[in-house]
Image (cartoon, rainbow over all chains, first blue to last red; front, side, top):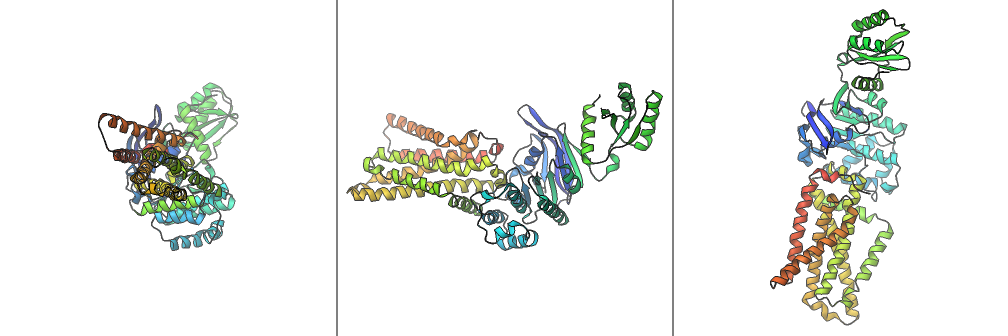
Amino acid sequence: MPNTVIEVKNLFKSFGKHLIFDNASVTIEAGRVFGLVGLNGSGKTTLIRMLLGLLRPDQGNVSVLGFDPWQHKAEYFRQLGVILDSDGFAGNMTVAQNLKIFAEAKRMAWRQVEEYIDEFWHDTFIAGEIRGGRKKVKLLSRGQKMQCGICRAFLSWPAAYFLDEPMVALDVDASEHFYRLVRRAQSKGGTIFISSHQLQAIEELCDAVGMLHNRCITILKSGAEAALPRPWFVRCGAEEKFGTIIESICGFPPGYENGSWHFSVLQPEATIPKIVSGLVAAGCGIGEVGPETDNLKNRMRTHYRDAKGNRP
Amino acid sequence: MKDILLILKKEWRSFAGSEKGVFTVYGILVFVWSFLPLYNDLAFGGAVWWLFFSVIVSGNFANTVFVSERMSGSMEILLTSGFSRTGVLMGKIIFVMLMSLVIGGLCFGLSFVWVALTGRLHLYATQPMLFGALLYCTGTFMNAAAGAWMSIRLSSPRLIPFVNLLFVGLVFGVYYAVRSAVPVPVWLLVLFLAVAGILFLLLAQKDFNGEKIIAPLDV
């Protein structure tokens, strides 16, 4: 298996006049759990569809496991686990009948499916459905259908996974079970690409996170965190000149919210004292200075603010 | 080949798992249309009615296996689960054809009973009967392939039976235009249908490998 499993290089994609990707690039190595976040309509599902060969890039290269997805090789898809918007099951068939068809598509024997179910799904309703259950999929709840979709995606422990909003409608137990499956897949060398709006889950599960913004992919979490700008705040007045001082020192446009200026800094140890000195010299009464809670949500907010250059 | 068989199996199981009402409707359809030979003597006019029957039946199955799958979004899963795209397309087209042929066959068989009961059995020994069956088979092929293509091309693909009706009309139009200019045998109509079917199959395969296969649909 190549070390780089997913490679997107200089990607351009538009629908009519609407540009979705403008020279976007990202590289994901083998064994990574990569989370993709972004606002509604930013292109998360479009990117997954291009990685799955359902959409064709206008320009640029997309490569997964050494394959060009647009070539539509069945051999490529047999190495993937996929969760998309639809559960993909035939409603008139039982869970077992559906799973059997998908297992055969991956050239798996039914005995292997039973072993997989016994080992990883024995305490769920799916085990009962596999062992002689007659319930048609269309009669299952939304959460149960999602669990069946997850069960199908991890069938055969493929080399790469593309999971679009995999935790929608999952209860607490099912979510924990999903976490365990992701960890197991990772331990088996699988590369997992998750797109979701559930930031906490992305933060807990993923060792690398990218955000779609301005038609590009920005890495928010990469393992080399020191190189990234950190979010800080200064509680003080909202005068425009204070914002200008902060921006001139840290290089990022700050935003004023809830009585504080929020901004990003690359080297806080050197930069923050300069900002404080500059503000005090300008007659600013500072109430508090400190780093923001460093979670994915704040990083996303900081990034959007930096890009927009919000001012009070 | 294995993928085609898998898709056939999937479609059959999905159809077999339908509600009882679905089978009742097909039963009534077969029963009603089986009386056709009593009032059309299976000459050319009667055979053409079988062709329209194939439009209805194959259009309906095309709606079930192509359109419903696209509307629910499960086509995306099917295309990314390890099946070859040709396997998915051919498996579905063959399923539409097989089901249409089974229903057509039941209809022909039942009509044979009615004809026998009314003492018109001699009609079934004639060439028009064979011609009607042949027309039904090629019409089914054309309608199945056109249904596959239209399920991708139409933004409102539930109109497939009506569009298929249009295609059948066009093929007839071409046939009669040729026939009015030069004397041509009646089996040329079968050839026209087969050629149109192959054309639609190629178009469907091209679109099945393109982006339109996941284009949004009017529900």
